[in-house]
Image (cartoon, rainbow, N blue to C red):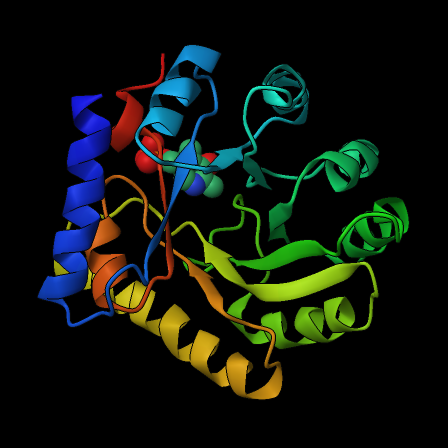
Length: 224
Ligand SMILES: *Cc1c(COP(=O)(O)O)cnc(C)c1O
């Protein structure tokens, strides 16, 4: 509880510190491996956007909480092709899109009875071969593909840089993404979300223009 309210005040203070407009940084609570009780604590602190990485775990939570509260669910983990349909039908956002094949599946399975599924393209900013995400220079092509799929709504970029403790280097990585985000916005006016910043580096992300920080540990403590 303490952790949650102090993280929220910290985000507001960082907006001021870096000259960002008030409430321009949304908090996404990353609830993977955390219980319904944790989620309800966050809800009691006014949080309504939640991020999950594992489809099966998330679907159970979404189902359980459906009646109790109106929450917005973001899928932020690697997407297996055989889970794309369930993800398309049960989430409001997918932030981890990194290939055309999955974009096509999400679009097919979203169907026109739902609102369009909000999409962020995951960029692999550290160019690690093991991490998901498109290379920076491929982001624009994937944006073009998403833009042409009627049941998807292109919203922006998401990234998970390699862990780095040096604040200056954290900022440099995030600045590259922020520049790309600003370039893409000129081409695709629906783009308005730069999803960067996790528990150990969200100050750097807010300094560089993040519009959504994704916090797990900072809100709920360590994951076991
Ligand atoms: C787990 C996770 C987070 C939260 O990480 P913390 O370091 O616990 O804040 C954020 N984004 C993604 C994509 C994650 O998988």
